[in-house]
View 1 (cartoon, rainbow, N blue to C red):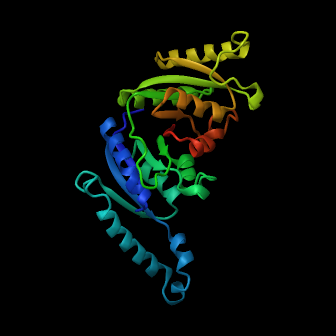
View 2 (view 1 turned 90 degrees about the vertical axis):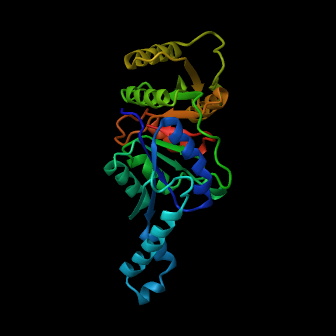
View 3 (view 1 turned 180 degrees about the horizontal axis):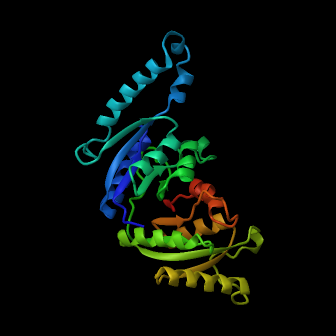
Length: 291
């Protein structure tokens, strides 16, 4: 993977977007990257609320009016934080989740930074836009909880934790995690969770009473082999328990700035962390880098 040079920051002109801006600024400075602000006008959103107007005007006319307003907003939005001369603005129309992925592909963006949700009700869901971006984006996606009025803790270059699931895809996850963490000058550690859904059987970050089990030893050997193949030497941890809870506990224990997890759209391996990507991203109080 090439270094991160182009960051996409999707915005919706909300207070949450404003609150996220210092986080994106910090990420761009840390990685030495440029930022482009993206807004996608969703015709279905205003069609629902302006149904009466559509009796008098065509959809094309209404859509054009909303596009003009959005273009004006985008040009003036966060222009002090992201000067127009340095940070391009891109305005498109369509389904936001799908178009963000397409723009990222066509514009050859290296990283998308997007909040995941806002408000108590939406915390039960990931949100359709963020979910589609995670599914369809051609590049890593860095997510953080939707801040209402306060920016998330600034992205730092201290401790990053990469979760490995021991599949063939794991090497790609680790290579990408290594590239971005090195670019950010962060200390990267590795973790693998031996899945035990029963909380009674969970011993997430503690030592096993009778010494490492065979499954734990085999997982550690496989983890070390993957790290060796990628050419990385890092601290490793084998934890047991429910995968999502164990990962979030490990991030809290490490006080990690970023949790790196794998995602893929082909669904070949049911054991991949992709199956838990939505749950981890939705519930994590920490930034998650999905590769």
